[in-house]
Amino acid sequence: MRQRNKPWADVFLQNNSHIVIQNPRDNKGKWKNLFNNDNPIHVEIGTGKGQFITGMAKQFPDVNFVGIELAKSIIVSAAQKVITHEQDNILLINENASDLLEIFTDNEISVIYLNFSDPWPKNRHEKRRLTYHIFLELYRRVLKSSGELIMKTDNRGLFEYSLVSFSNFGMKLDEVNLNLHQAEDPTNVMTEYEQKFSEKGQVIYRCRTRFNK
Ligand code: SAM
Image (cartoon, rainbow, N blue to C red; front, side, top):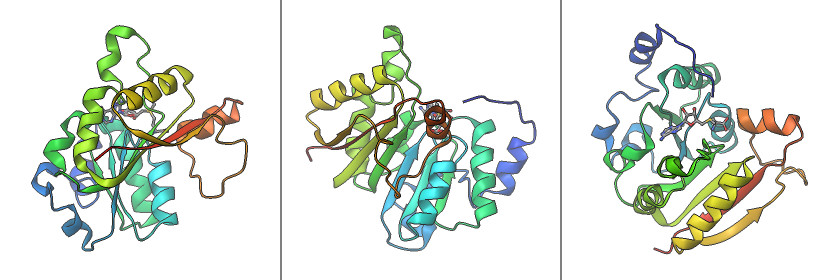
């Protein structure tokens, strides 16, 4: 995703610390207190500009959504959408997913979404792929035993790599969809990338998986 230098981002994030949580590690095991309810917590990793998370939060008001986004200049766009839509079931975190265990405790999350994650096609960058086994171990820890990992991508190479990675990790595949948009699914919320790529006629893949816990 294109990153623009936004010198005002720091001040914006500080002024909106009720949405973009400044010290997320302080809330490990206590995220439900921030939402003031016991609703399930769904986490999107690599939230981008927030189209998916704001759409999902509107469709599922009884779910609490947390978006994790590494790039400060991008998370501000997601925060602006949350403010515009006045949504109280979304919180955002400007962190790297590799620190997931510092931010969430075991079994705190019901669903993790990986939407159009960077494919990192070169072999030497395999460790950066968000479906590399080291990341899967983090997801396994923070997800509840009934929890799901749901992935969407347009990148066939990353999709195939991820299916193998899930399988090697002993995960159960509940769905492998090789053309998500072939049949209309009114519950599917499109991400920015999904909209862009599907408008260009690219196929969108989705898979839903669970850990053996
Ligand atoms: N999910 C959005 C979509 O589908 O439109 C954005 C997709 S973009 C290709 C990937 C996003 O993931 C970028 O905004 C990037 O900054 C973020 N990202 C990549 N690696 C990350 C990591 N380790 N932790 C958190 N965010 C990450």
